[in-house]
Image 1 (spheres, rainbow, N blue to C red):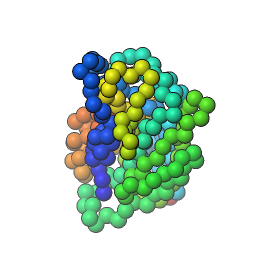
Image 2: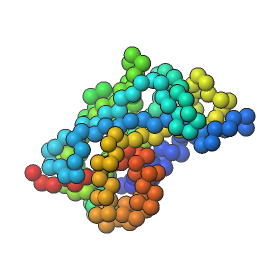
Image 3: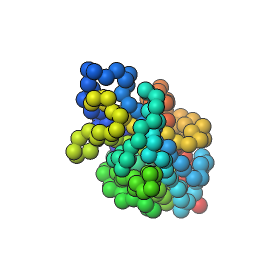
Image 4: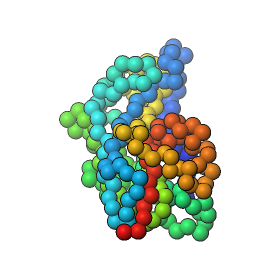
Length: 216
């Protein structure tokens, strides 16, 4: 089972293009894509449904250099990870049961409960909506990532300086309710130690959300 860190690093490895020496934007362009989860609570029951959406205008703010850039029909290549973090004996743990349903976009399974998808671009707005039906008990973490490079390489956009690199992360709305403290309950040091050493980079920048699922 892939861990969140590997999931995020896999996406991060794809977000960089060549940097032109003529440009000087520390860290390159950086877009932040919003994510909403409803409801947000620390405990659910088997059979409950999480509704997830990411909707934003095509004028996107650059977190590093400042200013807005118009990204028309851009490919962000979002990915979704759903990970059981309440057990470290992965070989003996069956794949957790969960059902993904998309209401706007196609979902492509990648490995275990990690899927890739895409945004729908309509009327100057990007849309991604899906839901998850919880079917197993345990402590889980839902995470999101985005990439700006696909099979055809890096993408260009109006106002880009030379070949300055660009990246994107996904941020959860109301992140103070993301239950990061529940990672301390995981027996896996990857979560109760490594992730918590740099919570912004390893949890919040991946729109992390932790929660329990208990029997109904």
